[in-house]
Each structure stands twice: as C-alpha cells, then as structure tokens.
Length: 163
Image 1 (cartoon, one colour):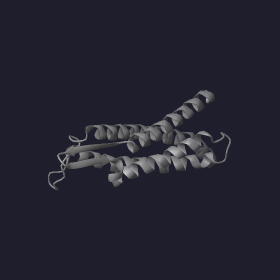
Image 2: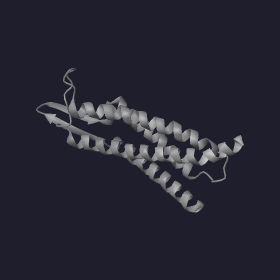
Image 3: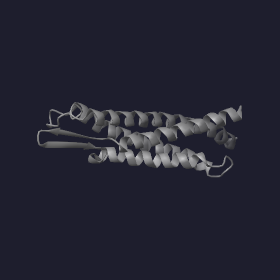
Image 4: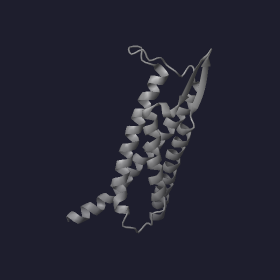
C-alpha cells in the first residue's frame, strides 16, 4: 500500500511538473502579427505584465517541481515540502488570476474604458494563451491535491506529538 501511495504521489508530481512546463512553453511561444493596411499589430506575451508574471511564476514552480522529483525519500528536506507546496500553490493561483483577467479583457474588451477585443484579429495568439491558461489551471489543481495530500500525511505525525 505504501509503495502504491508513493507511486501515485510521484506520478502526480511528474504530471504537475509537466503541466507547469507546458504552460510556460505554450505561453512563451505565443505570438501573432495582424496587418490592417499599413498598420501592423503584434501580439506577444511580453506585451502584458500579467502574462510575463504568469510565465515567470510557472517557470519557478516548474523548477521546484523538477527538483522535488529528485529529493531522496528519507531526506530531512521533505519537512519543507509542505511549506513550499503551499507557497507555490498560492503563487500559481495569483499568476493564473492575473493572466485570466488580461485574457478576458483581450477576448471581450472593456467598452467603458475603450479597450477593444483583440482576439478577432489574432485568433492563433488567443488560442495559445487559452491553452497555456488551461495547462496552468491543471497544474494548479494538481498542486492543490499535492498540498492536501501533504497536509493529510503530516496530520498523524502532529497528533502523535500531542499525546
């Protein structure tokens, strides 16, 4: 039973790493140019600070996820994993929230401020951003599951210390 649980935990970590890495790659490669007569519009993730934050946050979490995969099971560093899982889950949540807000404005615009939707002109870019956000959201769900599992596994140790 312990080996099965450990395997599922490791598999979830690998999938979370893959989801964060894929969200970084998809967002970082998202760009498209639209020309209207002599006016050219280029859409890139670097034009939005929210998208840059999304890429940086997911990159940091991907590096963390990669390093945790090679952490020996008996290492004292596992004591800090629950803390870092919490920190990086919060980081993913904030980066996805910021990027989703920008994506919504890009898709729907804001008529009160005069921001027009751009997804009609650069659909490939918007589809890539949507894919990156979906992958980031999947990674967030996996990190929440990992966090709940870490808390669940440490609770018996905390309760044993009280008796």
